[in-house]
Length: 371
Image 1 (cartoon, rainbow, N blue to C red):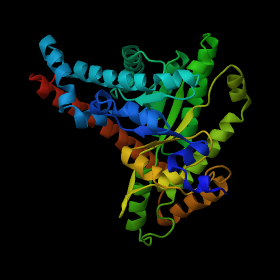
Image 2 (cartoon, one colour):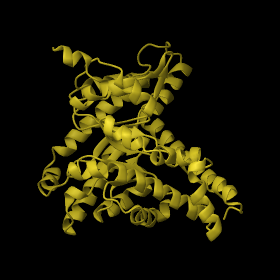
Image 3 (cartoon, helix red, strand yellow):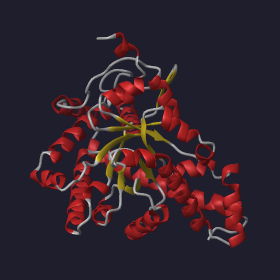
C-alpha cells in the first residue's frame, strides 16, 4: 500500500470504492453566495438531495424576502408560493450540477428535490406540475414509497419523469419499488423515449432505522452498546443491496439495459450520526459498494474528508450474515417489517406536517391568511 493511499482525502477514498457522494441539504444562501458551486468544484460531489424541511428552516431569512415581496404584490396564495419557492431552489440546484450532468452523459449531477406535497390521490398531477416548473433534465422528484403511490411511480417514469422514491425501510418495500421502476422504464421504452435520460433512485434512511430498533432493544433489556445494538441499518442495507443485484441479474433488466436504461440508484440518506467527538462517520464508512450513493450533510462531509482510513466493499455478498443479524431481533420481540411500516407512516406524517407548517409560515410572511 502506497503512502498516497494512506493519506488521500476520505471523500476521494469513498469515490475510489465506487460510491457517489451527494450533499444532503440545501438553502437559498448556499446558492446565492456561490458556496454550493464552490463545494461542487472543490469536493467530489456528484449530486444533491434536498427536502421541504430545508425551506421550512430557511424561508424566514433574507434570501427569500424579495421573492416573497413579489408574491405579496401579486396576491399569491401560500400554497402557490411554497411550490414556487421549492421549484426555484430545485432549479437553481440543478443548474449548479448541470455541467457535471452533461459532461458525464447523465451519469452524474443529479438533484433529488421535494417540490411535491403529499397528496397521494393527485400525486401524478402534482409531480407533473413540479417537473414542468423546474424544467431540468437532472431533476429527481421525491415521491413517497407507499402502496398507494406505486402505480403513479410507474406511470411517471413511463413518461420520462425522474423520480427518487423514499423512504424505504424494508427489503419487501424495496422489491415493490424496484418492480414499479422497471415497469415504468418498460413503458418509457414502448413510448419511444431514450432510456438513458430517464433517471430513477430509491432512498433508504439509515440512522432512523437504527435509532428505532435500538430504542426497542433497550426497552426489551438488551445490553447497551453490544450487538445487536447499532447493527440493523447495515444489515438491512446488505439485504437491500442483494435484492438490487438480484434485480439487475434478471432477463427483464438486461433487456432494459440493452435499450439504454441505467440502474435505479441506491441512495443512503439520513446518514448523519453524532458521537462524543462530533459527527460520526460510521454510515459513510460502512455503506460501501460500487454504484451506491451516500447523501452526507456538510458536517459529515467535512468529517469524512479528514479521515484517511481505507475500507473496501462492505455490502456485496454479505446477505447471509445480515439475515442472521436481523434474526436476532425476533428474540427481543421486534418484527422489522412491522417496524418499517410504522417508520414509513411516521415519515409521511412528518412530511405532511412540514408542508402545512410551511404554508402557514409563508402565509404569515405574505401578511395574509393561509388559504
